[in-house]
Amino acid sequence: MHSGLEYKEQNLHFGGQSLQQIAALQETPFYIYNSQSILSNIEAWQAASDPDRHHICYAVKANSNLAILQIMARQGLGADIVSGGELLRCLQAGIPANRIVYSGVGKTAAEIALALEAGILLFSVESRQELEQINECARRAGVLAAISMRVNPDVDAATHPYISTGLTENKFGIHHDQALAVFQMANRLEHVRISGIGFHIGSQLTSLDGFAAAAQKVRELIPQIESECRLELEWIDCGGGLGIQYNAEEPPAPADYMKLMDQILGIPGKQLAFEPGRHLVGNAGLLVSRVLYTKENGDRRFIICDAAMNDLIRPALYQGYHAVYPVTEHGDPASWNKADLVGPVCESGDFIARQRPLPNLQAGDLVAIHSTGAYGFVMASNYNSRMRAAELLITPEGDLHLARRRETYADLIRGEQLL
Image (cartoon, rainbow, N blue to C red; front, side):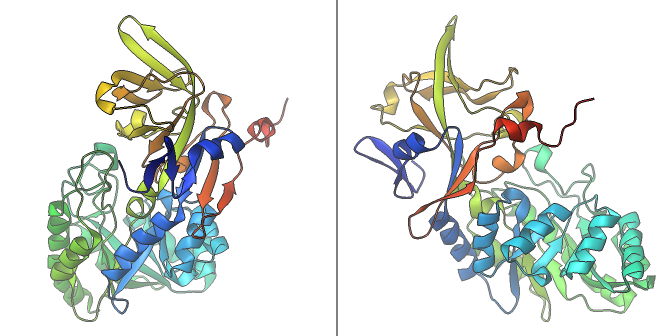
């Protein structure tokens, strides 16, 4: 069983709270996060870091709820953002603009202008045309934009192809063979200041090999860039991507990862930025759902619950595995039979788990779907005109906080206009 979960008097507890009791008060499905788990994960990163040289910038795309961002702000973390909306969320939650790195391949002129006005730390540049756009936006604003170049090292991250970002076939970054030329181009522009270099090869990495290969390629570029451009880089952005345990994975610890980056990229006078997202919040969240019906098609058993692919898209999109726990204890798991846990959405791809050993659940029973603190609610939709779930947070004091209310039918049509 994952840490943070335990059965007390046959009822599953999370962060010391009875999920059965919470579900009696909050309509299912709902997300629930344990702030103590998040704080423990942050501590693991901070304990392994040197505050004078290392900077931890939370990858906001993993979970952008304001209450989650507020925890990050209170712990002194910066942020890695990929949109103007994420920027506004960070500022609202108290993360200082000068600790924010703006990544992503498709920054609009309006978003760039917003970030310049806020005074972010730097832009992570991913193409020549983006570089030109940032320069023009900075000219209009009458400021100097600090930039870092994201290099695509053409390294296989050994992860799902949809979350691989460091290969030539991926849309991200500037190919390492072209990096020097783009740095030289930036050096000629009047309204940008070259501050750093960075890389990010993918997400949910469970081996250090890909990190090492990418870091080595970037390390070899640095002296050439500094010599040809006659400058000294201040920042090396190591990206994120460190994986978590969904099933039987054994991902490296933050200390091992940071030690490796220091061995390769620990150059005197340079700051290292790290951008964990999933690793901070992934295993700190559950999606709690209620069984609606059960049925059999031939010898295939289906358990239909009220959580669907619009609530959690990872199983359908990435074939992602999420452990499923009955909220009421159901005997020895060795006696369970295989079943498909599916949702109400009209797609055969709407499933939470396929052919998974599950107990003889019946209508009204509750299940807890683990490791949904990252890329869960943030990827939710209103497909089939379904309302998005509530988000709850267990505070460090053990109180239950409504971080986002469940949507209503009125929310579904807000902003729409009849002819």
